[in-house]
Length: 521
Image: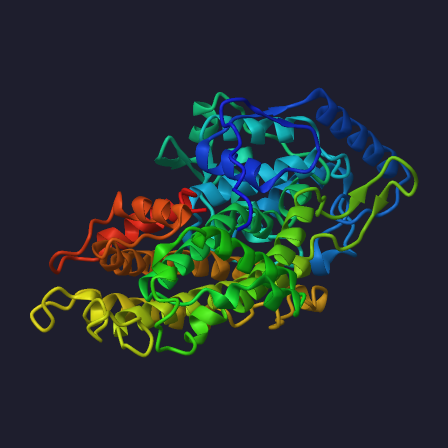
């Protein structure tokens, strides 16, 4: 992207004040175990919110989930001496998830977002609730949460219930990588099981924290991926000795699409100083490069605009309170509404996967063009031959070079195309019809996470092939601009030049790791 990804310091504790979190703060706590610290400001909001709920309860009216049942049982009154049992039963009954456990960093991000939401002063929990969540994060104790179970409407009920069970000494957790029961996890973290009060279990499970966590974690990761995709595109242009005339700023000003303009400008900067491009300026028999090169600003720019709109929605959610009912200082003190509904996140998580599909597709097409090595697409040498053999083999026939790398890229793109089918357009009602329109945001999030994994690999494969293609220009004494040459060196630090057939898998995985680490851009 046209800016470098921020890299926050992980040493100091992250103060939890109730203010909006940034995606990089979420990533730091989730992936790098940055500690968190509850502030006095946050705890004051928590106590004020609990006092407001007490005022509302004193009025004797029915308050959803406080002195009533849940979902389709909302009209069932609960006796005052059963309110604690009501909350405990809510966690137990709703912890019905299935499937493999969510990644630990995803659960940590979910806990952080829940913590930040609870201290914004509208959830009416006691201070012990956020204090215990913060202590678990700092103790490297993470609930085990099955991946599948949330429909993303009444909050991420099942996943959040599994996480909350640990707070009361039930369920399971990972402590320093070991799987243990919830009671033992609390003991190791020097905590006691909580006795839940009115509304507290509901506040713990009735929010968008799982899908929001995955959206937050996707934000810096996709920014770094997009940076790498631009680097790969510039390197591929050099590998085929393509034209840069299509990057003329006047062309992109004539269309006025902001993302397209930004991508073209970035590619121009990357290629500044290239002698590869200028080496064939006067004797190039090709008229135009294929669309995967010539239309890169339009395709990647369109993806960039869509990605940025997704990030706007994701970052807004990092300042949200999404449980129900919400509690306010002024009357009426409690309001039942629908902030738990995941529609805004679900739609944009679906859109993010569509954007990723285009990034992967155009990268795979450039891989194909490079490896096909036809003189129609790859600039011939003065002897009338392409500078390298098809698939970049040193001994064609005896060796296969990177032939199967393109196959694998195609397989990745095929799966991404399936993942790009939106989850948010399919509705299945729940709770006996009370919850009659659901977002399925967590499934959109899971698809986006998988699409990111695959797109990172496709871009890694393009970097691998483009670096190899550039070697032949280097053999002739040509070079790219400083930016692209530096990118080439980053690739070569983990993936040496191909002098004979070898397994591409380790190189691709190493490059995908560098993409995740933000080494390109």
